[in-house]
Amino acid sequence: MEFNSDKMYLQVLGCGSARPLVNRYPSSCVLRLRGKTFLIDCGEGIQTQLMRYRVPVADLHRIFLTHLHGDHALGLPGLMSTLSLVGFSHPYHIYGPVGTEDFIRRVVLYFCSEEAASNIIGHDIDPSHSEEPVEVYRDKSIRVTAFALRHRDVPCVGYRFDETPLLPHLDRSMADFYDIPVAYFGRIKAGEDITLEDGTVVPNARLTKPNRPPYSFAFCSDTSFLPKITPHIKGVSLLYHEATYMEAERGKAHKRGHSTAREAAEMARRAEVGALLIGHFSSRYKTEAEIEGLRGEALEIFPKTLRAKEGLAIDFGQLESPSLYAPDSKDETR
Image 1 (tube, one colour):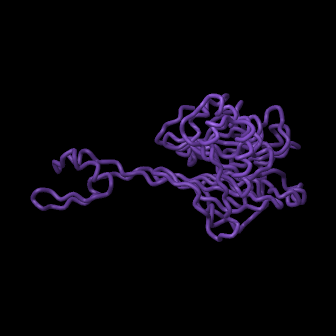
Image 2 (cartoon, rainbow, N blue to C red; image 1 turned 180 degrees about the vertical axis):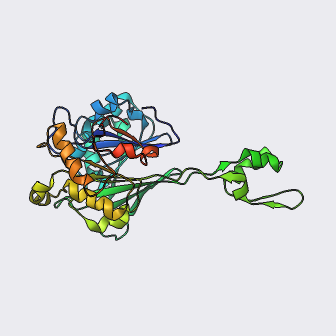
Image 3 (cartoon, one colour; image 1 turned 90 degrees about the vertical axis):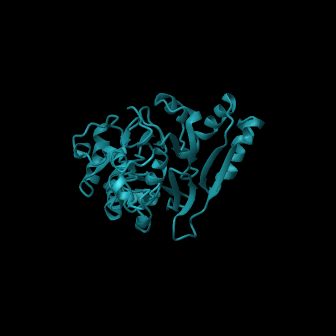
């Protein structure tokens, strides 16, 4: 898939749980938006997957960890070591729950050069005492917030990524009709009305066309079924929610701090999200048919459900396409 810098994409690098399989890597994905690449979770094998799917490590803008279990964080030492070897000049910021800053400090101490160490920065996030999501990062194109999840007794956070609304398109034909100089085009795109030389005010809406709606994405893994986070993920374009087990293993899921596929779908339904992507599958489900069975349980509750697979790339602009969610949909890169 070719990635357009004006769009938003999610690509799955790993969708397994604690025990990797030959064809299934531990948790990790990348979110691409406006020339930036955000890495979410960093399980073992991350460097192989980044190379396989042509994601240069130099392109990683920020790294976000949900928690410090091995299948979500053990890829970091190798990745940081490689960064240290190849050299880089800009800071690498890594965010995660309490303990992340100390973990990164130790990784840097043992695996990175002194020069690289000053540019690898860990940040602790603690939203556990806040009823509202905590802002983690913001730039001109995106806002990232974090909220507490429940995964046994381990600090764990979920993330929401909200794209900043795009500026409207200039309607050049209308600008020419009113003989508006090019020097005013930037002000028009910024939302200003324009006053002509004769005093006539031309409303901005007459000179512009709406851009596409902004996209949003939420990532919830690992977590037990947690209805209280519904407001934090409300209405996102795409929700990634763990679906470690089928409904028959609900007791085991709850004991281990995980969710079933049906529970993931119930969260999507409650939050009225645009689409659901399930992942973090238990290694007990080894075949394609078994994974499709997980998706089948979710589809009973939430029809717009996709299942994660290594290499799967999702164009947010295609999330409204009904063919994407057909029960017999091919799980190839979209």
